[in-house]
Length: 571
Image (tube, rainbow, N blue to C red; front, side, top):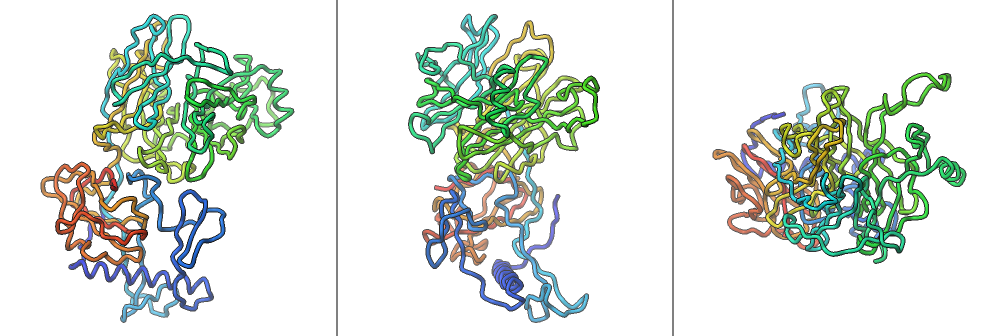
């Protein structure tokens, strides 16, 4: 992954080349768009993350779809590199002997033009960090919890951590609500669950998740998506009313029922009202995760989907095994402006080709980076059917639609057999930050493997813990450089979460949207960062302010020497 090259001799040279190349490439692109005549670049367009509006230097634009491009909005006060979304891809140009950009339009021969590049990322890679294990975090010391208690959803609501859990006894299961001020010491408030206006102690949200909807009226601030089943007669009636919102796989003849996704709303997470119709009728038979996406301004549901092809129309009814015996479990997604109805989910993530063909994606555990709600991540549990074992991996997405796995392998593997969680493990949403800065993710740990005889099954809730929020490292094993996309800084101070070796260092430069270093904020003035630094202010000759003019974007450049960056916070 490393591609070392000599650094330019001075910071001034780097800045000058960067500005020249960026400007010339903009001119070239504009000239090509207008018939090859070089023209000044258009005025900078500022994209609004919500999509509600966009503005230019000459005034507000008409409302409509969001305009793509820089500068970006971070959506919070934190930047964690889970993908290359915020890393500038770099620019290049072919130059003549006078330094003019002659890319594409020049007449030089094969050896007459010189290749130059600016802000080119090199010598860096992204690597997941293994989670530490903590738990069980809640004791199952009540008679109706003899088999176990496990979180299905963890949320941070203001200063309070809230959890909805499923408790199982020998004969039945029930819903449990818990609260905590620090995310570790949990209490059980004396509350009463209601469903459709009536007390309901058996309310089961076990296959679903709860989320907070910031766009909703108070009566529907909390929402839930979960798995329900209907009869064949109800299915036929639904198909008649909604011919586009069902799939044949929803009908499970082996259980005599039809699976569907159910929606519920609540003012407080305790008094629930079920929506009168299914959100969609499809075969999502485990861990359905819902959320409100503030960037899309839509509701999104992540489902279980199946990598399975249609049956041949020439097939006899008795041929072949059931579709769920030959398909591979995968992850699906659906979105809607209206929480009352959704199109059928579409497959967005399948078992990657570097996994054994017997591995499947069992759950999705969709969540976001704490204090960065538009940084989408997942923690799918991979079920290794070859030996009925499990592991948790990490995937990331720039928009919640296109996903890829973060390099580095599993973040967590099933502990040793015989431990309370030594049979199998399944991650649960959501990733939250504790007061000490740790990121934690709940998981359900079982005493026995997933498909083992379940007569003696026992389970509990643990935490996957990343101390200091060190979830993914952007690292340079030796020398590395990169620059960010221009973005609107959410604070004037930059707090760095990073580690270097004893001989390594990290330096940061602040530039304007055109790539020119801000006065006093170049690499030459940067105070080097050494060692293990958590939320350490970046400074330039002792000055911690980023030095930008209020309301303007910045580009951050990084020189890494045997260093890892885990995150950037702004205040």
